[in-house]
Amino acid sequence: MEEKQTVQDDEINLLDLLVVLLKHKSLIIGITLGAVIITVIISLIMSPVYRAETKILLKTQDQDSAITQLFGGGAEFIMGERIRTQNEVYIGLLESRSVLDNIIERFNLMELYKTKDREDARKTLAQSLKAQVDKKTGIINIGFEDKDPKRAADIANAFVEELNNMNKTLALTEASQRRLLLEEQLKNAKESLIKVEESMTRFQEATGVIKMEDQAKALLESIASLRAQIAAKEVQLKVMSTYATPQNPDRQRLEEELKGMREQLRRLEGKSGHTSDPLLPAGRIPSVGTEYIRKMREFKLNEALYEILLKQYEAAKLKEVKSVPVILTVEKAIPPEKRIKPKRMLMVIIAGFSGLFFSIFLAFFMEYKEKLSNDPENKQRLETLKKYANFKLKN
Image (cartoon, rainbow, N blue to C red; front, side):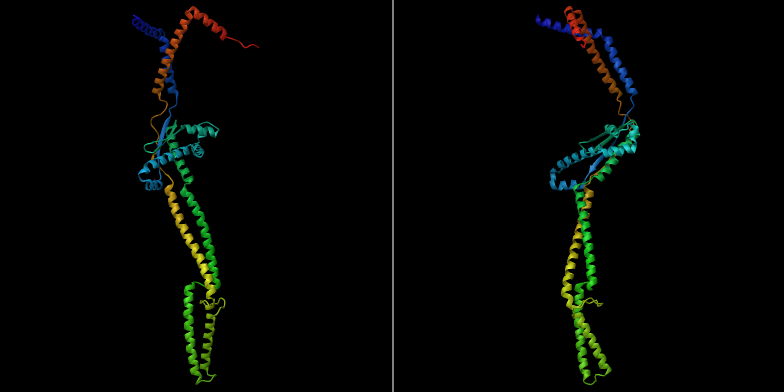
């Protein structure tokens, strides 16, 4: 008997709900249709917005190959994490002040957005920029929304150009820092080498030394040859003295020749200063040779250091080029044909459901209020609430 009564109560409650809906059907239909009609009008008035998209891919061959060699099978995970972090950095660079300001200047956006404050122009521009990363492929999608489809495509492509410019300017990687350090060291090494070369030149001019080893060898050969010639002349003079008087012209000429040879030998074996003779005096070989060795050692040291730094500098430049991420344009933005906003159908559906639910709620609220008013006790309570709800501030 109780179960039958419960079922009957439920049926009555459901019927009551249906009665309320039918009682206020005009209100429900009116509010729902009104919301739909107003939304349709608003969506038609709203200016269409288009989104142009360009796709880029960051590639760093040098780092990828190094990670593969170092980690082998685990390189795929490590490179994936590095690429994700790198992509996030470049998306952040798109919204940097320098990039936004360059875009604003290129397209005169302050006038287009009708703002005198550059900060407001940056905010409006950043809101229209839609950049995200495809987690599967690592491709960065750069989209820009604008009322003009051509301008949307131009600005999207301009963001890629500005990102490329910033990438070249701010690519201070470890390789570039090493290159800058080597460049400074190479400059200093070159200056030192020039000073040593100038010092070596002054030493050669002062001593006549050009190539110590060759000159010393030539000197010893000249001394040996000259001594042999002197010995031969002395023998010839002794023989001539047995039959020729001192006044004999041939004997006098021979004596003069022998005197000149001896003087030449004295110069070659002596320690005299610089002469026009290209052969260095034998007496000066130890001191000049020691100084020459020191100068040559210093020259060779600076020359070797310069060559080593030059090779390292060239290698660092090559590594810097490889280590800087290359921005590859996968797809260039083109003017879109279809608008992305407003989505009229979605707006109408949402407005219709919102109006329907609001009108149903309003219908039940009005029904509840009507029941309260018909009940004497509740009516008295409502009058009391109104009395205390309406108050004035005392002066």
